[in-house]
Length: 356
Image 1: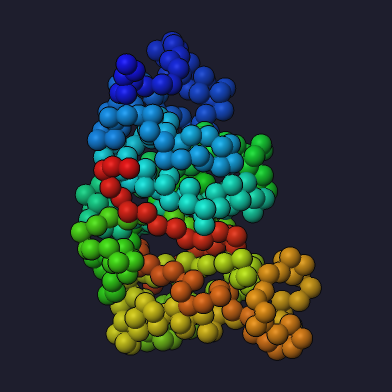
Image 2 (image 1 turned 90 degrees about the horizontal axis):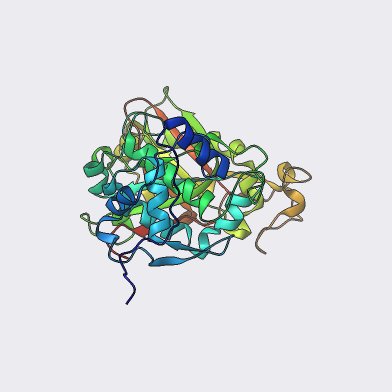
């Protein structure tokens, strides 16, 4: 009888020297350009943790390589990225999320647009693992943020087969393709966290994945009334979101990251997250006149209720207010951000558990 606990990957012997190990991984095309942690049998088994009863179990077929995304393969890439074993359930949930058809992994990661997957974590696990959602949460300095985001990208590269210059056709890409992971700052948010909005209990844990084209910082340090702050966010978003206007028919979404100070000011003005969504939907619009004959106009995908015959028709950035995702993150300071979504993808979520 076959041993279900056995690892199926081939074993490779390399001289136990840092340079030799790193050179081998690079020659095989398995790295993102940074040094990796060698994946040994012991480290992979440790990474699998409670998932290790059958490492060959698959999350499914991952596109575009049509490969089996087994727990073992995911664990190998987690080790290479520098994850701790306690990070692994977050990574498993993130991989399950990007494999959802709505995310359109093969599209958003193979496109010339070079979209980056962003991992946003909700629930008590964020504090337990030290996933930063406070000061500098988009940047370096926190192992959980850095390694979980990096591990997801290594899975996309090594298991899904999206290697730059091959199946990955990004014209420029963006630094977020190395790693982009943070948590919602639930402790400083005046609103319900996203996992509770989605119907999970406060004690549950969840990942949200969005594929983005860029990060656009939005500074508002002059006005302090919530509706005035929100108006600044809308005005800043209009121009930056240019590509979104042409893709609302394909389900284009936008993700707004509101810093705690801006969120408190909006809340003090009586605004809920839903009010923020509604305001952005109604006001972040551009006219047909301004959108005609440029950017993605030739490939526009607009619903039938957009009157293209009237140059004054205002086109929204999304099909509905529900397509505007709102998170609170960051530390002190009056800097929010818009994560510009890639148009032919949907924001996806997955509950974090210790089992498949």
